[in-house]
Structure formats: C-alpha cells, structure tokens
Length: 286
Image (tube, rainbow, N blue to C red):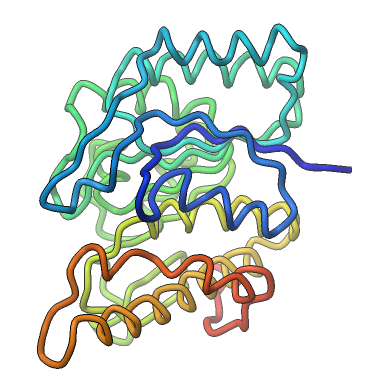
C-alpha cells in the first residue's frame, strides 16, 4: 500500500531547503509527498539577496480546504519545518488534529525550526505556540540543542536531560539533530542520539530538513528499530555532506572558502546513497 506524507515546509526556487530537501529523498524511498510551501523564496536567506512570498494562515486554510473537499485529505504522516507566523503554526496544529481524527495511526514528525547556536531566526512569539501546542501533538520531534533548550526552558548539559524533559511534553520519539555536548572522544565530534560523526568546517543549509525527512522514512521502514533508522538517516547525511563539500571545494578553488551557491546540497547526485546508504556510523542504545 502507498504511504502518503503531507509536508508543510519552506520552498526555494534555487537550491535545497525545506520541501526541496525533503520531497525528492522521500519520493526516492517510495513515499507519495503532498507539499504545502510555508514560504516561497528565490533561494535560502544565507545568500546576499533573496526575494519571495510568505503563505498566510488564511491561504493555508484555503489549500487544505481544497484537499478536504475532494476527500483526499488522508495521510500516514505529516512533516513540518520552517514557519515564522504564529497563526500559520496554530492552523497547522488544527490540521494535524483533524487528520489524526481521520487516521488515529497518523504520525506527526515535527522539526521545531526556531534557531541554532544561541540565536533565534524566527520571531520570539512563535516559541509559546511550539511549546504549548505543537509539541503536545507531535509523535517524532527533531530539535537541535538550542531548540530543545527553548522548548524546555532549561540549559541542557546531557542528552538524557533533554530527552526526558521533551518526552514528558508529549512526543514518543525525540532525536537531537545536533548538539555541542562533549563526546567521549573529544570536542571534534558531534553526539547525535549516541551517534558520533566528524564535524565539517562549513555551513550547510537544508541538512536539518533532510535529516527529519530521512528519519521519517527510515523509521517507517524500520518501525521497531530506532537504532537502524538513525544509523541509516545519519549515513545518508554523511554521504550527501561529503559529496557536497568535495564539490564545493573544487568549485571554490585552492585556499578559498565555498560560497552559499557552491554549498547547495548535492541531492540528485546522491540518489543511490539515499536509496541504499552504506552505513558509516553506529548508534549506541542509551
């Protein structure tokens, strides 16, 4: 039977972020993906210039109403990412609740995109909506360390602190997508739900969206094995990032740092790695 995902995220014309990072990999792995673009930009905002439009809560309602009137609002998963409007996010919660009534087995995968490295890049008034409404209806939550601290109101010193607090707020599965918590192997490694991988000295955009989409996919294919799902998810990220940084450095030339255009994820070129990734990391069950 087909598995259908409703993905409500950002969209860019050029590059890979939001729905552009999630849709192709999910389709490669056999999922039908219905996309609603929370924003439509020319490119991600790490470039010098960007233009575009933001979808309002009213416009989101109109799109969903069209799906509903045709009786095709039946989904196995909902995936959400970047949005910067509180009323839009509240409408997302309403849609999630309605779709869960239609399908009690529906799984809501939420990436609570708010910021990173101590800095918010969405309005501060969106935090209470995530904390008080969204997290409670999420089944799988994928914050980074900073977002986990925002949601819990606590400084996090260990993975266990974050996981325990966030589980208490509602989600069955919580995966910290990146942290600065020190690895037993030193500060040159990132701890990812007891998965460690070397840091790469570059700024990538869209990797969080790819991570969440792959976690959805591999959790579906390994429903009772979070260890395998995480290993495949992180291995996909590893291969895509490795291919991207190799290409970016070649394009930039010796001694030069790649620019945002050169650092766009090499997604299409990584199709085989997305479909069947060589496992390059090992997860340790907590």
